[in-house]
Image 1 (spheres, one colour):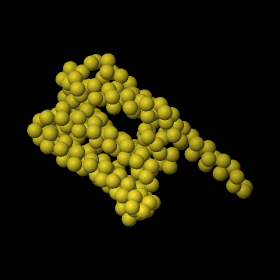
Image 2: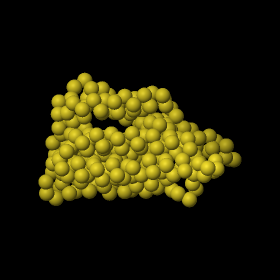
Image 3: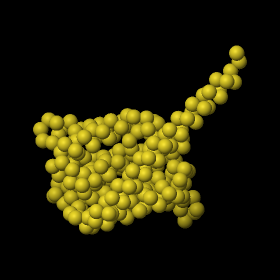
Image 4: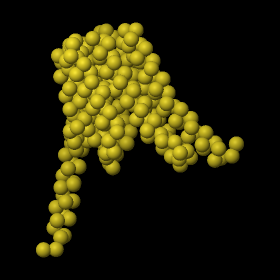
Length: 249
């Protein structure tokens, strides 16, 4: 097989790997419908591992160069919407974590609609590799709702807050691409995934210290994201002042 054909095949296989997420999303919904919540949470983990590695593979095999007619970014957004938003919201709804009646419909629709905006905005990722606005981590939200046993009121407040944060101009760390503290981000994300697996394996009574450790990473992630956002704004303000100072009087 000529090298060019081999490179194109590698690019195609990377896209197939990404597309597996759509199958995982279907299996998530099937598990949720069967009230197999733990199975759904395991599938969430598999989907996160696929999503966390397909971009690395895409850059390694230069898929844009070897298959320019295929929009891998669009495929990734479709799959991520299904696995990070649609399936987790379905879990919250069918699992009984949301209020009943009209309020429950409003709360369930809020992340679905907010994430439609998030996944379609042209500035969803910044030039310095931050997610702009809450990056639709509804699988993480649903995970902690289940693990912490949150009731409908607390769940609704959390879901509505995160839905609103989609529209708030805050940059969130993209663990595999944000250059600042890249090693710490990758190690932290890896340990969080490990903690996730330990927690799911030990449901319904996971070790309290593992849950606390996983939440500590979430706190670190949020703190770093806020710090990077503030630093970015200071840099923008400094550049604007410098440009103004150079204007002729």
